[in-house]
Amino acid sequence: MDKLCVIGEDSSGAHPVLLPEVLVTATRFRGAAEFSPSSLSSLNSILLREMPAKTIGEAISGLPGLIFRGYGGRQGIQTAAFRGTSTEQTLVLLDGMRVSNPQTGVTDLSLLSTAGVERVDVVRGGQSALYGADALGGVINIITETPSEEFSTRVQASGGSSGYQAGRISLSGTVGDIGLRGSLSRERGRGDFRFFYDDGRSHSRVRRNGADYSFLTGDFRAAYSPSPDLRSSTGISFTGADRGTPGPVTGVDQTSGARLADRMIRLHQTVDVKVAGGWEAALRFLYTESNQSYTDPAIALGGEPLRSTHEVHSLFVNPELARDFSPAIALVAGAELGRNAIASTSAGDAARWQQSVYAGTRHTLRQTDGWPAEVVVYPSLRYDAFSGHSGALSPKLGISIGLASVPRVQMRASIGRSFRVPTFNELYWNPGGNSSLSPERSVAVDAGCSASADMLGTWTADLSAFSLRTTDRITWMPGPGGLWSPRNSSRVSSRGIEAGLTWTDPSGSVQFSCTSTWTDARKLSEDYPGDPGKGNTLPYTPVRMVHAAASVHYGGLDIHLAESIVSYRYITEANDGILPGYAVTDAAVRYGWSAGVFRPFCRVAFTNLFDAAYESFPLYPMPLREIVVTIGGEL
Image 1 (cartoon, rainbow, N blue to C red):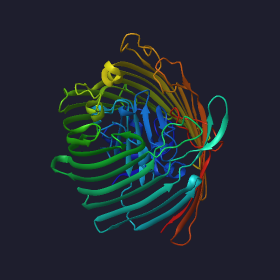
Image 2: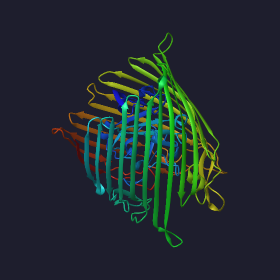
Image 3: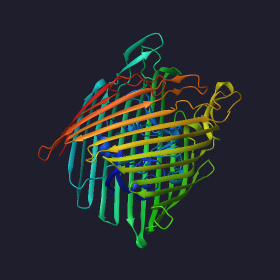
Image 4: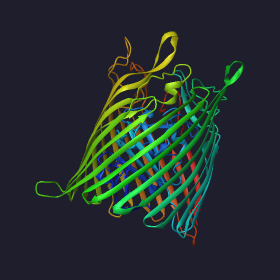
């Protein structure tokens, strides 16, 4: 199926990658990522293997323009937001199909492991013209591994700090026209990580209580390809998580018996077929059932401990047609039909239907007199209708211009409208939900350029500028009797610059990258008389982020070192309280060798190597230095 070709860099300059000859997340067209009209980063399986990250959230945390929030250690929820937008304005896809939760609008990235992932595409800027609702800030597309041609078995076991234990086994291979892949993994730990507590009078090192966790994940895929003109894939995956949620730290003594349990089953089916006239047809089907329960014995309602349950069912069908009419013109068009339903003790029972149509074209202009080397234009248009809401029309125009080939100089720009539909919680939460909410809407402009040259290795520099304005932003505000309720009131402006530099030595064995992001995200509206947030920086949005990474490959030895620097963040709308900035260093060393047909490896990963005391969200301390040792192999 998808294959990787020449070695190069992604357009953000954040990481060296293999340029994929795949369906590019930023355009829905096959082609090299360097022709993306939007700012794009891509992490391949090699980089994911080198990093100390266990989850998708940790893996993408250093990418430019992306704000990562971790609510404690491994048991804590992990979220991501782009360029001063909210986490609800980030769309997460798994193999091109949405996994964002319609109840909360937030995807917990701690439930998505890096194991078994072929590539992660991160596209910044509004993408509703391609993917519909909730892609206001950007899109994260996680592409899982496909079955291998030869049969192989991978096993690994891990142990580390705070009682961490993990094991994983996976099998993959092809028999005739049928490819099979399956895996099963288990993680658990006490979660009693060390952190520094500082109340302004004393500074002490303590351990987190009530933060134990257990994760169980499994997946199976069968791919059928009897001819180059027909491909089919069927898959099922399961995720189960049971974890303590001790809540915010307000003192040295922490006592909490609160727990969060998540269960999710996902079924998907895809069929791709080449039909007459050069057309390619695809049909994608996705069904997701998720159950979540939260219990807290410290909170009593009617004499009984608090227990809330939420069950969400999602069904999507996505037919699509594509055709390359010539090397210069290509078309992709499709529809999405979906239904989300919820049964919740907090938000009641509700259902929502979705009907969407979209179309996009790609126009490639080759070099002629007076033209640059190559110009690629991507106009696209999408219409989404949701029951209970007015329809949303999302146009977008993107362009990529190749100014020179030696050295390679590429320019890109895009402008488009995007939107986010209210979540079930915002509409129906009891008490306080507002069923008359309208979708949030935005206009995003993105422009950038990259240059690559060979001089004692390969150098790539990248620069992006963006502007994003959101109207009808949903904000929870106090009302009569002190009851909080969401309203469409806020107007927000976010603008900034992302810069990156990457160097790879001539042999490809040493790589270095550094990115810097500057963001100015402000609230423009006065949502109520005397609103202290008008004109101020949005809470929890860092003004500056810097990430540097270095990798060394020598024989079977891989060394990876990363440094993340995040500036201070305001924690109030009035900007009169701040969360200090921090610098965190992570490292990993991996050594693999061959022992006949068996290829064993050993890996040691360090997170927060120098014991930095920091929080990515107030009152949720992150762990001090932790170590994980993994031993495994492939047969």
